[in-house]
Length: 217
Image (cartoon, rainbow, N blue to C red; front, top):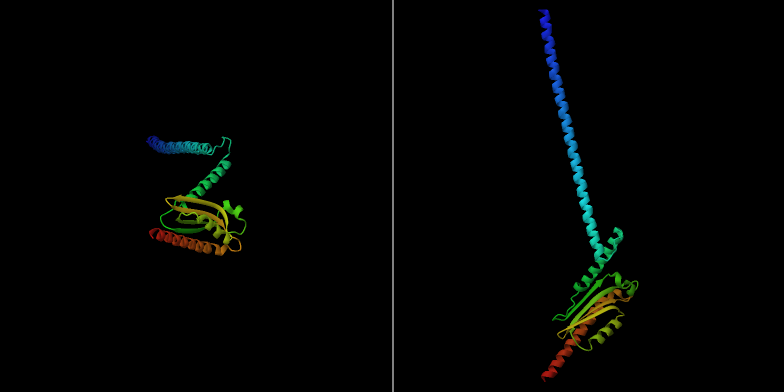
């Protein structure tokens, strides 16, 4: 009887031990499976990152090659030099656009005077140190003595002409001037020039009215 009880106790102990081992192995295998899954996910993410980075570099190189073609650079031009050329070209295009849009180029139907102070490095060498640079536009009826009158005004105000353009259309003309003021008279130059141009337009209109009256008579 005692021997039978000992055998039953040993059997119960073996059963508990088996359950413990089974639970431990299950947890171990589950932990191992989870670790492997996480490792696979990390490897997949790393692979996707490498592929995305490769595609990004390919796009950048493709755009750089297009820029080299547009700017007529050879394939050996490094990125820094290429970007410097791009910046320079963009500035040139911006200036060209500004020249066309800052002031109207075609003459209008009404008399106009526009004077804008500008800061342009392209004219600084021509203007000299300490000079105010500005752009003036005069739109009025076209007449033969207009240019000599403008030149006389500029000389009387000690203004140096850096650039001059004239557009005539349908009996109207627009004169666009880039001028530099004398460094001793920079502040007064803009209002003086504006008043001189106003007087010029008034004389021109008065002359036109006199001519029309003579024709009617």
